[in-house]
Length: 243
Image 1: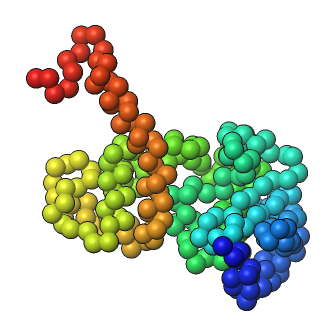
Image 2: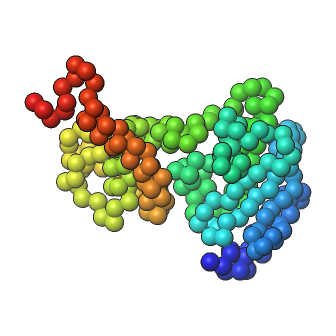
Image 3: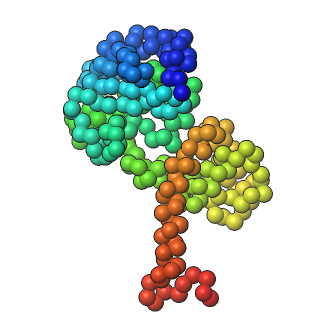
């Protein structure tokens, strides 16, 4: 796949100029056809300088479809889960993938990525270092964060129900006679139809499919646990379906 700056050179030059105009301490570089943005990011509270962080932003080859990776390069922030970093890459978790549609939707500029999720991440880090609290709230890492997010969006973090909601949101055409994912036993047209319609309008179908794919390993573990429980019931318990 051709990287973004080769697929859309005019768009690249336009966004590069926009970022470097608004952030004079950030500069673009090209290493092995991967575009990187390096330098320091100023963090302000109103007109007051709060802090400054040395950062590097790496654009994936399929940008803007995938989210850029962000690194704090000054060694100030521990690359641990408790400080919102991924274990495998050491990159900062600047947004929950499931929340991209709300924080930095498809079609948004690179400048908006820096000014909203990246900036908010480092504001939170600066305030946490100073006060020991997260000023903007926080999602937990990994599956726990996903479940928190779905609890807020669907009113449930039950994974099979969440998977069914995602299936309906991603469906090419939703039918009102389907059973509602919430588990009420009602048809969706008589229950959560409006919620699902609203989310279908807001979240691109491909992002919903990616969210469902990210959830699948946890669903598989849950299914396996159910199978194990059925095959090895606890003493005194009657196996499901035996009555």
